[in-house]
Image: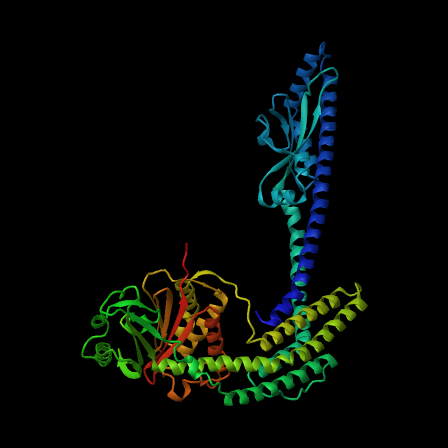
Length: 606
């Protein structure tokens, strides 16, 4: 996500939260008023129905002979309620004055409805309904849920009995319908959602406008840092900025000039380290007096294609076939007990240097050195030396960049205190500017500290899973460039201890370089296999290859053969591999392709 997008979201989300919160509060308020009105109306209707029932019973009693007992009176009232057709009509007229009541019933002690505003309910057992008091105890959110999502009925009951009776003779019941309540609530909800939509659109407009205005100076500083990182000269700013921003731009301009000067100096600086490199890629083999292999170093697999434990105990003739230049030279030297000093021969298609030391009567020490790898390692160490020189050069500029950024942060804090709580939107914008200033400070420090030690977040990981995920991520880009990505795995565990984020960046650089090297498309194969105590990853493409004159420089910072390249990718990859105690090498044939070989120490699990 870009900085501008984060800034807009920072402004938009609080405004959206306020709009949604206000809408929910309004919904709860409207629902409270409607529900309270409905329950009060149901109580009023129940009282009116009770009054009608009493009036009708009283009138009926005047026309009937007086009862001699309580039981006769109850029987007389029940008969009257069941036979009085006008009572149901009066109940219907009473219910007509409300929008939320679905039915008014008068039921007897046995639960049978004797009179109702709904003729179909008379003579039937009263259907179950939730008490209005229980519905009101749910809380407003659950009430709204029941009304909108369910089809329930809520009853208000007023008992009616004779004096001296311990049980009510009748129950007057008013039924509220959740469906009718929903119909009453729905127009109000639609109005609230319309207002919410308008509010969100206004908030989006404010966020976009404010983000654009606030991002202008930060975007110019970010572009200036990008130019410095590429070694480009900074142009004179066309817009008059605040004093703090101008100071930062001037310091960045100074830094850019020093970086460009450092690159020119580093192009001429060569350390005298070739004498220390000679044995770094050595394969050491120890033979006994009978010319049988006793022990071998880890690098022997690179030359012989077999693990050191696999070849232990084998005779010299099995390792170096007679009739080959290397086999004849070593065999004759051991037979004559004469040493070899730096003899150059061909072995398995590679140029190698051989050294043989005769250990008196105890055996022989054979050293194999890759002649081509010697120069490659020298160049890689030269990259490390250049990075170290760049770090020393730019380290003195760090405080010059930090001071104006701190000044900007201090002025923003003072401005925030002056505004206080009078303008919350302005305070929020100041907070965003303060956060982005801190981020800019971290970006500058990251650039200046490129060659300083980084904090590795090591964890056990499987290189096959990590690389498979990377190839899936790049698959759309590969298909667009007509590149066929293939992962070849020997099914053996590829566990190492590593930082997944750094390793993803390293492999991403190599994979994209491979795709860029194949403008007409082709196969890009990633081979993962297990060596001796190490995991080996080979990335091969069918591209244009690396020209011989550029091979010494490909790991140099800012060196690139691409028209739009930054020259940082392979330098970063090289550093990541170093941080994981690994090694990186390559072989390339112009017009055929390039293969990068990365080796990492295998994770030994208990």
